[in-house]
Length: 144
Ligand SMILES: [Ca+2]
Image 1 (cartoon, helix red, strand yellow):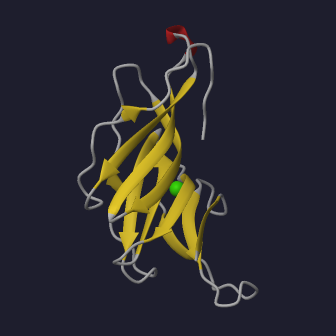
Image 2 (cartoon, helix red, strand yellow):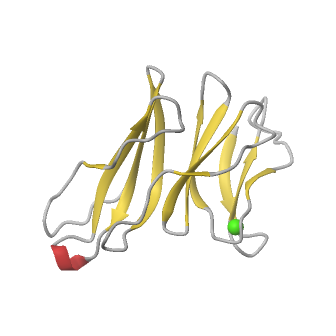
Image 3 (cartoon, helix red, strand yellow):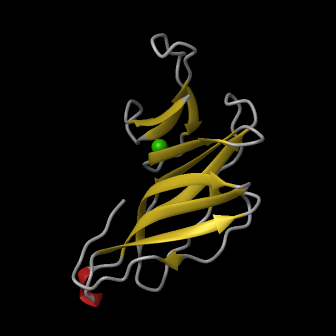
């Protein structure tokens, strides 16, 4: 299974498609189709199915499925900070049953850097920690 975003409906949606041989792929299944632009999907296989992190409305969201066909409601896992951050390019992994989600965070040049990389973690995919900034190099733009 791969996840991708497409502008076929005019406002960027997230889809998945599956293949048993890498040559023949299934008809894409819509995963996230709100009116906002949903992009940058990061898909993992979990113990219970699948999870995708993606970017929409300058925030990071996750959405899960047990089958890969029926997907639940999107869960917002970041919130806008005092500086009107924009969060993009999530990268999701599962390590020993816990989820780690890193992303690029636009913070604006006025504090000395344009982007920084932050991560949040979760033991259950529902409750996520506050962001931990993993680089604070001044005058340097770091993106995933
Ligand atoms: Ca959309």
